Image 1 (cartoon, rainbow, N blue to C red):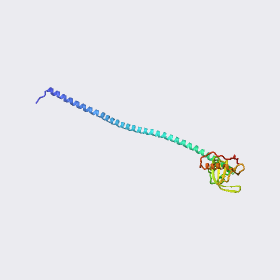
Image 2: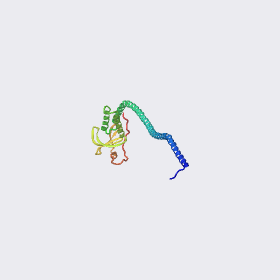
Image 3: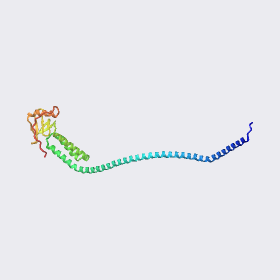
Image 4: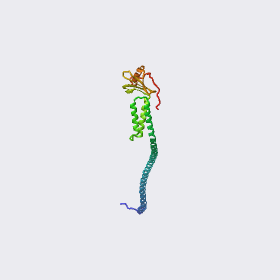
Length: 263
């Protein structure tokens, strides 16, 4: 066993005392710094929580900003749509006003049209009686239907006007067409049944019997039927075939007189 000297014992004691002093100092330091560290930890935790809150607020802000921008765009679209609808409403109101004016004008026009249409029907009746006497039964019946329509309360003014215009169009067609048809006619007390008529516009009306013995034309100057020279017989037959579209049109020679005005 080794025996320590006095000096060694003093050195050892000093080391022990120093160690004890360091331990005591570290304990004091630990006691002093622990609250600081705790405060730092709490501050760090608070900072983290604050950052999380900031992130949440930022996210919410971005969400609200997106909603705000979407709302602005929707508002702009609604404003443009409302403006478009307002223009349509204004246009419809203007159209309604125009239609109301037209209705007022139509009522006034109807009052003026009725006498005019009656005059047109009377004029058509005079034309038929003064004209070359072709298809008299058909044309007179048309005039009678028009006269009845003028007093028919179930007929609208538009329907009456359309009937009058159609009748005038038909009469107008007679003036520029050629036609062959069969019918009966009484001349000088003699009845000719189922004879062949030829109409050339309004300037010539001829009939002949099937045996070719009678060939007559209507004389517009005297208003009577007169004999037509049989030399025209072949031309009359050719014209009748042309009118019935049995042969192509070709040159014809016919005696005609100028039409006279209706009185």
